[in-house]
Length: 306
Image 1 (cartoon, one colour):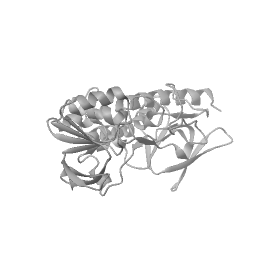
Image 2 (cartoon, helix red, strand yellow):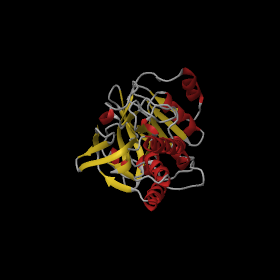
Image 3 (cartoon, helix red, strand yellow):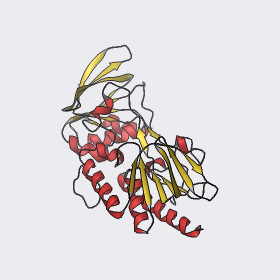
Image 4 (cartoon, one colour):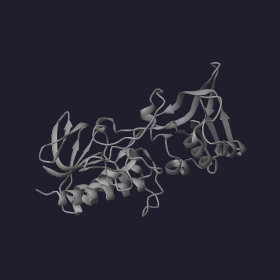
């Protein structure tokens, strides 16, 4: 029996592990993909306090090493559900077996929606990005494309327009769907071209050498090639909360409906990071959630000792 079960091994989950361990609690972190989370796909990160520049993989490795050094247990498995036990503890259910804990922190994150193009997963971190704040400087004075026409896509494009030689926005509809104020700003930028009623059809280049361009297809079926050293996809996020919907309240978009205290409707279950309903999703805000959730879990365990 571990004190704190943490589902998700990204910055939120690993920070929670470190805080829980330093409060003399035993911790098990369960991660279905790569420990470190989505930041491992960022070739260069420049917005983490204390690091002028660091790769996402190196940052993730440091987080993992720090948690392990404090005594964390790490399990590579997918949690498919949670069971509440009669004694007030919880059980994480995985295909590899069951793991018991006194409290649970869900730090499952939110995955960026992909377009379903060939080799798309392999291009992530090799020219394919989802965060201009994180990766935009990597493409300074170069050509990039942004896929999407909502607020997030336009904000990404505006930030990139300040850095890049040219930004091509590819929107599948005949209009931009975000705020008109943002759309007007975007249309006024001389280095921004907006392609309406157009779909991305194929990434050019290779996962080894990176993206060199993007093939797009208009509504009429005509194809053209856009020179692009990087492509930023901004077509929404998918929170990974579905297996836990019986235990936490979800908002209309599937995010955990929790405030800054990181509590849920189920005492003993907490949430942290990008899976939580919030306005800003960055590595620093995920880490902050991890600290808050861990300390809340520690308080709950101490208060409910049997």
